[in-house]
Length: 210
Image (tube, rainbow, N blue to C red; front, side, top):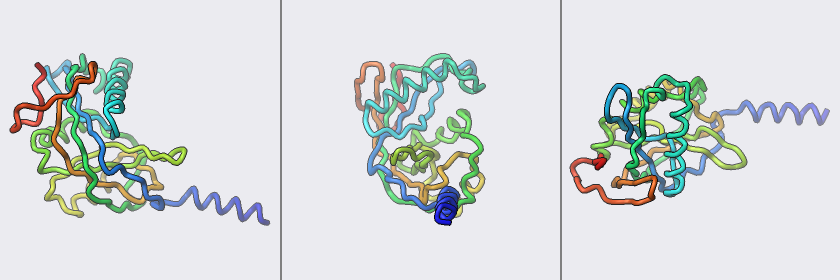
């Protein structure tokens, strides 16, 4: 009898939704890479990685570069070369946003093309946007986060909920919250040498590649 109760209890716990509060970092780094494609000579996109330090940033760029070479994804096949210069942007925790079990569907990740166009207006006007960071995995008592989607500062809860209801991104169903982050000042990173430098043109957040 006790064994049956224990089994039922475990089953209920596995089917629970939105009951764990992720330990979102207070500060982190978002990294944007620049690459050539078969269609457009220069494109850029932030990676999904939420990195805590430069080593994590560099590791994520290397992983992106290597994955693009062997990926069967049609978007990834368009990538010809990833530039040595990337852009790192500090992100600063602002607030939690509660999840509902209806928000996540567990279908698939947004395509690379979707991500590129979502961030096109953002990278040059970071001060007008906030970043949603999403917990997508929890293993060995450690959360994994992704830099998910940008929202205008003037977007209210109605716009956020509308987006989450329509999203097909994977969110760990145990997570009780996603989080919003503000953007700091971006810098240039040569990810092959590790050299970090200021972006000279303050009116343009995207660094030149020379």
